[in-house]
Image (cartoon, rainbow, N blue to C red):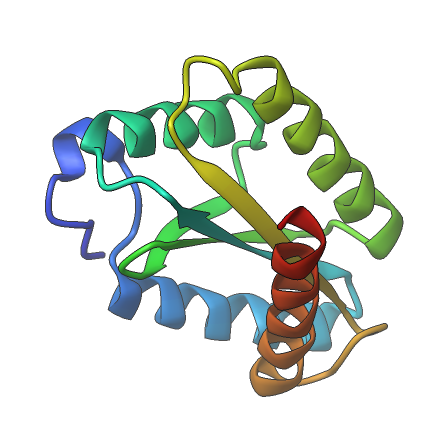
Length: 144
């Protein structure tokens, strides 16, 4: 498993490892007829490593032990939630937004969210990513 460039500080998966794990989790969800959720976070208005660390610390505190956090693009983080259904992921994102609002003064960052769940929003990796990306951009528009 490959971690991001500064794995000791952040403890998140690099893009390649994230994709491998996501593919495996989709296979497991299909095989076991379990739910799976995906959350994409877009971090904008900040280039500071310190802000990224704070966001990742928050995600890590909120995540369950089976949840996966990875860096998917330069300013995007992705979370994969095995056995989390649509209702639970909506609640998870809502709580994260509340947490971020609480820390908004100390963070020089804007976070937008998109999410999707298997099987409700799609049965393939592509479908889940497309749905989450659509909601991510919708959230970005609403936040501006």
